[in-house]
Image 1 (spheres, rainbow, N blue to C red):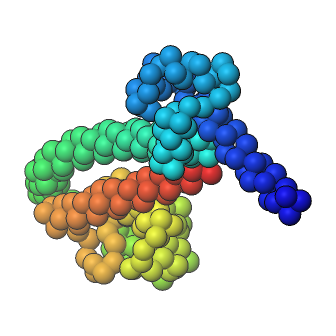
Image 2: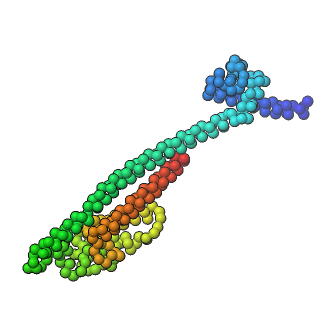
Image 3: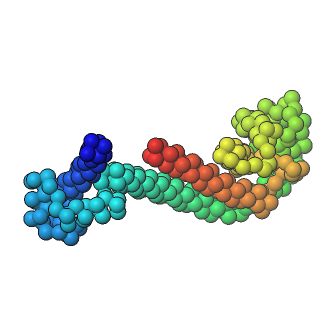
Length: 280
């Protein structure tokens, strides 16, 4: 008997521990679901569950049902895991909502850009006709002058003096010259920026930073072509009419594509950061 005493006590302790776990599980189920639903889930009478809670004693049927529920994932650890899963699911839904919002904003921005591009294209289609009318007017003025005096040069004022030293002051070159500032006038800062970009920016690349520089380069070239009437390399003669329109149009298309790619890359970067922050 003395040899069996400690073993009996140990077995009794294990049984008490199991009893305690089952009672805790029962209390959690009743607290979370209510006694009626807990009774249905365990397939026992609700009055039997009520008696077990009051007395702390489990009948054989209630004990068996609770042990089965415990094996199937009931109890505090499983409940905590379910709560963590629910929280994670909520965070994922929140991130998805933020990504959708960013996508909507990007689409609205693209729609605005496309509207501006359409307006510019319409204006550009009228450009060659206006240019031809100006050339016809200049020709008429020269004929009416009868050669009595020198013909006034184009773009008088800003380029009147440099025109005497350059055959085509409208041509932009990659190599600098001493009279660049006089020749290009208001366009000189853009010409400087364009030369620096052409010198440092690779023709092909990838990544967000490359897209940003490419976007700026195309914007500068469009400004030089449209706002200042200049011609860019590799051309060796000033562009006019349809030739100028073609140079402007392909750069506008390239700028639009680059802006889309840049915004898409920025959106993906933001989404990645949001997902990382919310998951942690």
